[in-house]
Image (tube, rainbow, N blue to C red; front, side, top):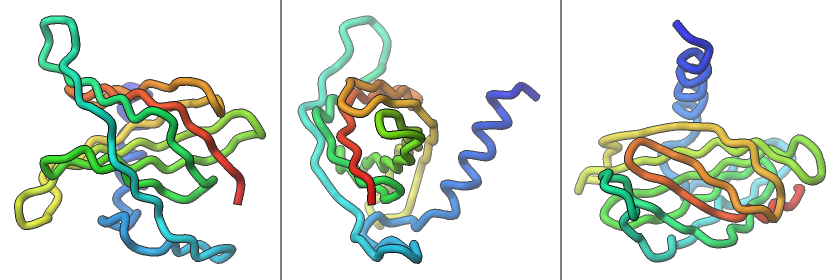
Length: 139
């Protein structure tokens, strides 16, 4: 089993421990801040011949260690969970979920990206490619 498969497995397990909905309040002992929810920008088909779809979220304001839920439409959402590693850099766990009409999770893909505060970041999740510029503030 490769290192990337191990990291992916651990990420899926850790994200599975997170609340299934991003409408709950954060359970951290320090703060009880509500999760942020924003709408995604225009969905554009990629210019190559693949079936991938590009979602440009633009600038997204994130709070250190608090998840942000981005509604992509059609029962799809993206959850961004940042963790500052220093004042300019962060690790962001990106979770893509698609839900059934009843609201139950149908598919879930998880990845982690290293991001620099204020600089464009890309994350590829299956057929979806997200681009966004994180603006991360500390707690």
